[in-house]
Image (cartoon, rainbow, N blue to C red; front, side, top):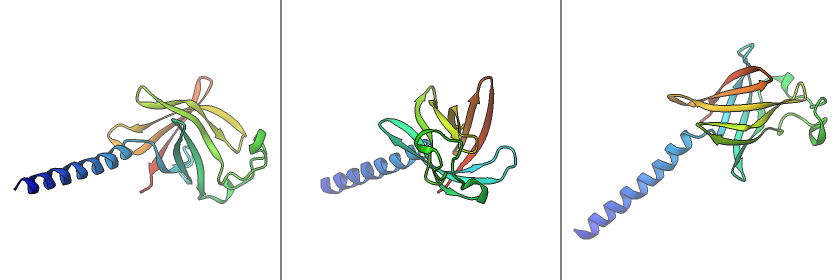
Length: 147
């Protein structure tokens, strides 16, 4: 009887830890996101948000519109004339006050960097609200989590 109780307890603990990790992942921005153009509503790309050295970064892993997969001819530095596909376009995001901020996002078509902030939409961990700031102006996009 004691062995049965111990086995059941261990199984319960294992399942709790397993589902706790899965649940925690769903409340994180880490993962692959489907991006949508905030002006046209067209799908654009898949962005993989990953963590490195305690900060989050985003990389273009798939382009869904032909015009997006171009060379970043307006970019500077090591991104100059490199394909957008495979490019890291989100850098150095940290979690503060319920949103990821303090980093920046590259708009490859313009070759310009903008301040960035993103957060999970309240009540919907599968929707990422992404806001790029340039001075007093901003653009907001809603990215859908891919399973």
